[in-house]
Length: 376
Image 1 (cartoon, rainbow, N blue to C red):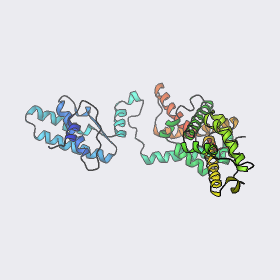
Image 2 (image 1 turned 90 degrees about the vertical axis):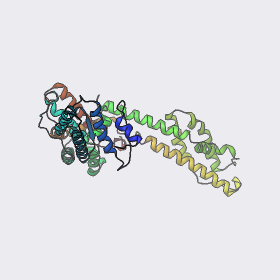
Image 3 (image 1 turned 180 degrees about the horizontal axis):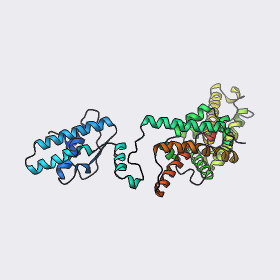
Image 4 (image 1 turned 90 degrees about the horizontal axis):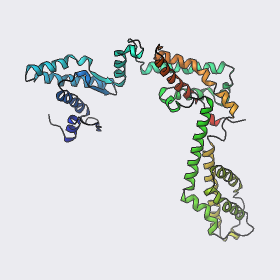
């Protein structure tokens, strides 16, 4: 067969890992099949099942299996001697057990081949996408029903957020992939989660302030009052004096001081007043007001972004109450995983399963955006 240099490299270079990128219809499946056969050619002692080929869809897996079968049948028909014919005949006979399939099917094969070690019933079934969606609906709706009818302080969430919002967030977060984001958050209880949120807020606030201080346009705006003659007895001149006094602090202080001074300055910048006659021209007065407005709006935006995660954060007692949501959600989450896994008699397997459950529960701890709940 004729291959391009790139195809030949992908097929016959077996000494390193390779990544092949190509568009639809460019021959990726053909190259993968030829690499599969080339490995069997180069290693006569390898059984067919020693090679694993993984695709994303069942359709692609079936296509690859068919092409590998056809290639093996060609090798069998063209075998030059009995030894080669016998070798390719064994490969053909092993095709039904070939590890050509999706990631799910490969994992299922490994688990069914080692049921004792995995403490699994070998007759288990892989939960398909539709069944998983139904199980998630059951878990979320059960949790919401318990939350709505219970007397836990966590029911206050429903007074801050409507049921539809809480339900939507639950559906978004009630999955192992999202749970992994906060897998460590609740390892040491609610206090650790609180500290985690606080650290994240402090880091985010610092990044916002750094970005603002590095903005040349904002630096020029702060210094505008230095380059004009501020008229005496003008309201806007008084505002500029406040801006110029605050500028060094805004550019060099710690983050807490920055927020304090910025908030005071936003309140102090009042654009009412100002005399075009005193400023010398209407154009200069307009420029003065536009610059002050820019400073005020930029600071207000930075403060809004920086305070979003903490300014209205729950009080500690409210936080402790809200964390009881986890207890309300534990039963339906356990029920959900009972549909996916089986009880493991082995202690290690139980531990792994509980860790996975804790990840889900940790994620469910974020079912409400606590940063938006007013503190007491």
